[in-house]
Image (tube, rainbow, N blue to C red; front, side, top):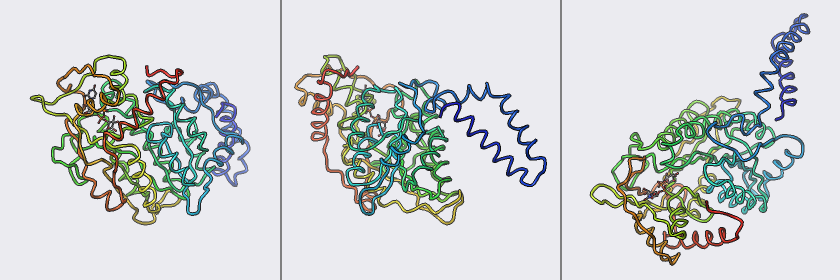
Length: 431
Ligand SMILES: O=C(O)[C@H]1O[C@H](OP(=O)(O)OP(=O)(O)OC[C@H]2O[C@@H](n3ccc(=O)[nH]c3=O)[C@H](O)[C@@H]2O)[C@H](O)[C@@H](O)[C@H]1O
């Protein structure tokens, strides 16, 4: 919103407030004008606050954005409406946050393909190469998904989106990801995974009708839990990283909004998701880049050369789990910001149930790339990593019909094919 529009909106609000505060008062005009002139007196401050673009005014100061986003206006609203229009019988209308992210792009495209209404939201921050996010955005645009540029902390923007479209569902995937980066930039995790989540839930709880919410938690909430495979009933009170702690906090925050406001909420604990259009900060991605460049890669090992392994899960399986979660989500029960009855609250593991050592991941990449890796074995640094993850998916299988079907070899083959074609176009750099 530009500053002039913000001023008009504020003036309108002041008059509305004055109208409510002094509905029958004969002093109303003078009191209202007093309020207006007080406001004008503070205009320089107000201007400073509002003249920053919507995406960065509420953004994390430690994060850079590529360009200043603006939103609003009839043409913008038309694009929003058109993107969110349902094109199939019984289709749903979904706001996907983090739509230019890895999982967000795949989920948005899959929803659009089956005729659901989809609107994306993303702040295009520079945690990893923004050109990749722009390329994903272009992909979505071609399939009819508009990705609004803005931050989940921008309450005015979120409310505006709900004014324009009555979303039946919110797929909340915007987050600060990455386990190890939390030691470098802790505030970005608080900003996105806690403040951002609360903002999204605040807007959802006030919306009429309230949407059902599905959001991305993480396998990292199991932290130091050593009972395998990890079941949703296992303890999650020993996070090993700040990232994990913010995701765990998110699960508790979800409980609160479900309890007080009747929001239907489903949290998905993703297990190391990989695949085409993936995240360059993840090991399988930067190992590929470094192996091709002939650079050495560090492979972590546990105490006494113990194996480090992950339950790597292919993106298409995760997308199926996300769509099944949306389809089985019950309606929220609140209205007017008030709970009317108990609402659904769920948490599911979405993993592959087949942990693979990181050394094996590297061997598969070597075969697919036809290049020998320059391996450096390193004792796992104390950086938030855990040694082992393994999902028990019985619950997701029963409730969502979730059945992962892609093994690591098959999934990495698809990733490598995409990687080589994406970065061989000459225009993109893998950094
Ligand atoms: O399931 C999750 O909830 C999380 O999954 C992902 O975290 P991780 O499982 O840690 O994935 P990733 O970083 O690819 O490391 C993979 C393996 O390589 C090892 N690893 C890593 C770096 C390195 O230099 N060497 C190395 O051996 C490392 O020790 C590990 O064993 C997401 O990033 C995170 O956002 C979250 O969604």
